[in-house]
Amino acid sequence: MNETFSAGAVAVITGGASGIGRAAARRCAAAGMRIAIVDVNDDKLARTRDELAGTIGPDHVTAERIDVSDAAALVALAGRIEAQWGAPSLLMNNAAAFVSGGAGGILDPLETWQKLFAINVFGPINGVQAFLPGMLRAGKRARIVNTGSKQGLTNPPGNPAYNTTKAAVNAYTQNLQRDLRERESSKVSAHLLIPGWTTTGDAAHKPGAWLPEQVIAFMAEALERDDFFILCPDDETPNAIDRKRIVWNALDVALNRPALSRWHPDYKDAFARFMHQDLPAGFGG
Image 1 (spheres, rainbow, N blue to C red):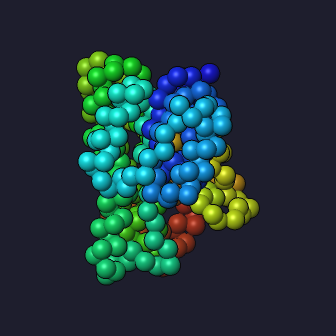
Image 2: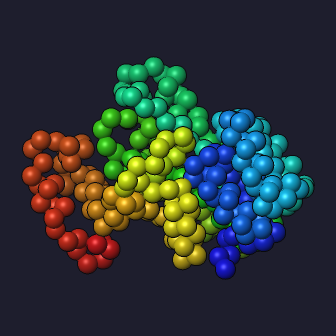
């Protein structure tokens, strides 16, 4: 039995009405947990609430329409949840915004950048600020999972605003985990979920992508090992490829190469050769 998902424990999941968040909520329901799902889509919230209630009963699920950029609303929710059920043993800051079609470029409207930062960066920060004090007071084993992105690690061109927010989530979550690790008597840990290509929302499932349930199953196994980085593969890109791409990106700094050299014409052949080599011992390749 995975101790993260245990009967009677409390889970709070933002972005919990669809995709990865809904899959996490289903996993929690199957374990008999009490669940608060947070989202801004009323229809999906209602459908997911009803589905979960059918599994664990209506008294063990609450659906809250809250924008995670609203810090005060999350603080109020934390107070209600703690008073009703106690502090969560699982806080999953999963809500995110993404702009497609090339939006989020360098000179795109400032409002686009601000919206992405408000949800993708301050959403997790607001969630931690709201729920962590109660989790620490409870003195029980608990986990915070922040959903990041491979784009925050490898930084591919095309959506700099989104990439920047997810790079911030990576940096924030690492600092959060160190803070928790250094706190005397803290039993709370932080983890960074890094999904691969995943079918989410209303998109049709495509060959190569993982289903959200696969991501959550992988996450559960990683949490059982107490992994911090939960780097998910998919059916198109194995972990070995992801690790090489991440190492190459980090070496841009160490070797003083041009920014994003993976996409620089002068480094095209060098990158191809690198990807065909085994990583040195210790890199996990």
